[in-house]
Amino acid sequence: MSNLNNQLVKQETEEVARGIRLLLARPLLTAAADEDGFDLVRRRRDPIAKWFDYYCGWRAHIEPRLGHARLSKVADRPDPSRPARRVRSSRAPFDRRRYTLLCVAAAELLAVPVTTIGLLADRMVQATAAEPELPTFDPTRRDERSAYVDSLKWLERCGAIRPVDGSTESYLDHADAKVLYQIDPTLLVRLLAAPVPPSRLNDPEIGALLAESRYGDAADPDALVSDNQRNLWLRHSIMRRLIDDPVVYRVDLTAAQLGYLASPTGRRIIARGVQQAGCVLEERSDGYLVIDPDAIATDTKFPDDSSHSKVAALLILDKLNETADWLPAGELALAAAELLDRFRSWGKAYRSDGGAQRLAHDAVAILRAFGLAEVRADGAIRALPAAARYAVERIRTDEAGNP
Image (cartoon, rainbow, N blue to C red; front, side, top):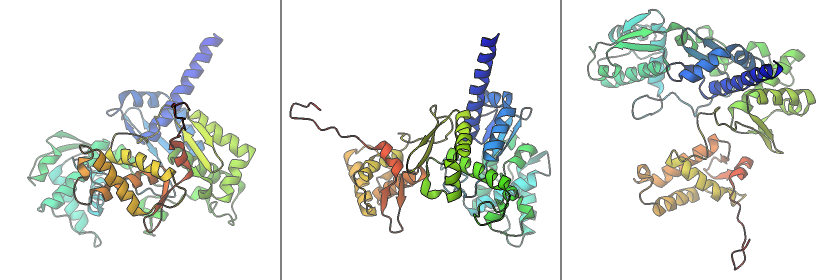
């Protein structure tokens, strides 16, 4: 019996760890998109939700009957590199107008369980006309209909709305198109992950939207807060960065955070949390790295040959690792141009004028996103310590080819 109990405990531990990483990679997990993954999270929802609450201060809303799980991730440093993107072929990031229409549409959809694309458009015309700071929605213009369709397609992909009759894209060409939607109001509300509802804000700054009152002013080392608040903020702020950022450098942490990580209690708590998530905490003199051996907890990988820019980034990284100094932006463009010249049938999207500069720019953006390089105001770039993990070891050989 004890062996059976041990096996059951081991299975639960592994499933909880996998569920945590699934939600880290996809904070909105639906049964329609990943039936097996959602079923695992549904079965282990209590320990998964408790892990996120204790270690990160994040709420995991898991709705077994509605078929979705939403991890409300909050950070004091908004990440502009992950914008909402158009679901249609271009995959271009949302502009200000699309974000505006997305928010207005979500607010209007909360009022009804079902609606049509035309009725919703009429409600949005009235809603935007009533707000002096918003341009009135004009469905007679194609560019406005395009932005409107993109916002609805994004909600559709999330599962907040479901077309039961008709196609959303048909509205692009015909403002009188007939599309019937069914709305999931619970999921619609969960899409916004913010401690403070926007309707309660007096301050328009995004920092006010992300303020978490339970910590008080614990982030300020000179603030008078209780030990419980300080320790809570330290545990949550450190774990959030460790599991959300590709690498965390010591220079980017406060003295209090470094002290917490250096203390026996703090180190033990963080290490236990990382282990429970099925990951490994790697500590170096310059920083910390959380590694998922199964690569479940991330939605993007590096190295990876899934895009031309990632391939270029890896080759540029070789060049950066060869020097400890700053590399001028012009040399990066030359390196990208050499790459395009060497492989004539590769990187066709970068063959137009300025293609080498665009390729270098995209490659550098990837290196920055993974914490492997930093860029100066003049465009010069240099490798950060984590880049050494990708350095090519050159073995010297004699004339006979022996190492």
